[in-house]
Length: 208
Image (cartoon, rainbow, N blue to C red; front, side, top):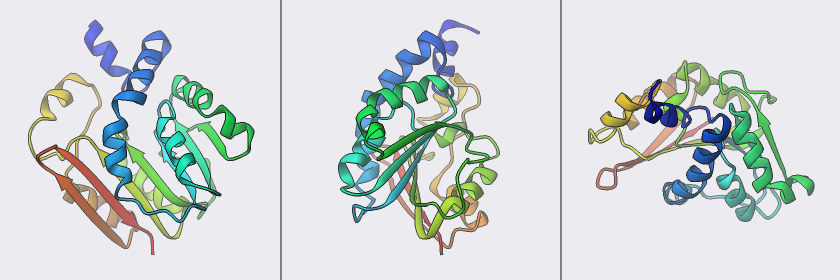
């Protein structure tokens, strides 16, 4: 594997020294798309939130600032990401407001109906058996809960094609493709917001 491919492989599962560099970069580099995604989410302030593929924990910190009484859980497949996310949110973890675990989105280590909100920022590109993963998101949500996907590509402009070629195991979906998969996973209603000018996509799926 060439150095460039090795670097981009760490976007899927950060490992070692290079993975730590990638996680730090993502914490800063994804702030803009995360902020846009969060603008589509209205919170009361007491929700239980799960951020899947939490990376270095930057979005967890944002959620903790948005929730006056809620709890935030982060999950990531990469031990390097979990380590960084725990360091970034150490005070909230110590206060009992936050938990960050290593786990797989194909088999979430959580109870049925545990969360009000589940999010996935810039991560579903790498989820294998994505229909099964979406069924897991549905399972851990409470009735009336929402699963929100935010991607820095709409899947419609063609700009993503170079990344799919460069990053092994990466798949890009349109909003309509997500909608079909999410309805198939049991969600009752799906809302799609896409910005083709900025090439970004936000999808919200609601559990009945």
